[in-house]
Image (cartoon, rainbow, N blue to C red; front, side, top):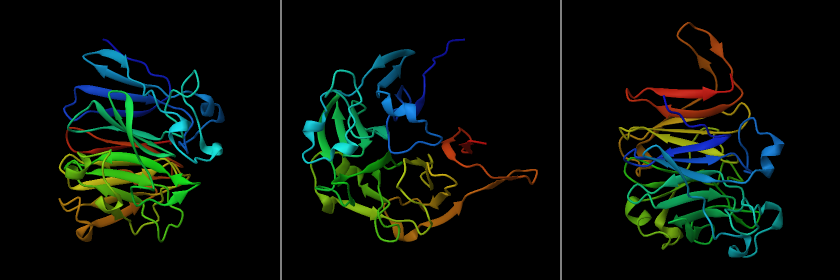
Length: 274
């Protein structure tokens, strides 16, 4: 059998038709579960696997100089040679469902819109309704739901006030990087879910459910019944979980929920630290 080994992967993302797999390695980010300090010195690379062959598609041409007034303490050049890589704590990547030469990269400086490996736009607090954190808009997660709407997890300063996610319709997503704050809808869950860590999402293929979790110690995760209408938040129903009971009645108390995926039977698999 043939196989591929990737050291310290934290993002594995398929394009819409399943022909390409995008992989990003562990590097300096806001927070990953069971993080080790030495990962803060790693450089981030982005690879694409297509037809069994790996390709280096690491983003270039983005530097701290592209982001005015960004505080030095959250600047992080991730590529050897200085100002030639993704900056500012990259946390998630996502390909565009209509054009997989377009990538979205969530960072502590906002959301970079990437076309053919080059940054063509930045979504931050100046053009989207996200809280101002350390002088910029901090994006902790990016994903696209079954309808093609773009979801961004944003760093929440006040859990009871700030949005946890902001959502852009598929029609307006296709116009990025053009747009303004009024194009976005804000989203909050009633649970104690927070986006002050690397947040993650899973949208089921039937469009009915969304799962939200993050990298905090002992943090709960939330499943939302979208009622088949991802952009209509008024009919959502949510339920939060922190611990698990298996089919034999055992009570499981992992510290971290690390990953989730949906299999071909529609079952959700949850990876934890034990």
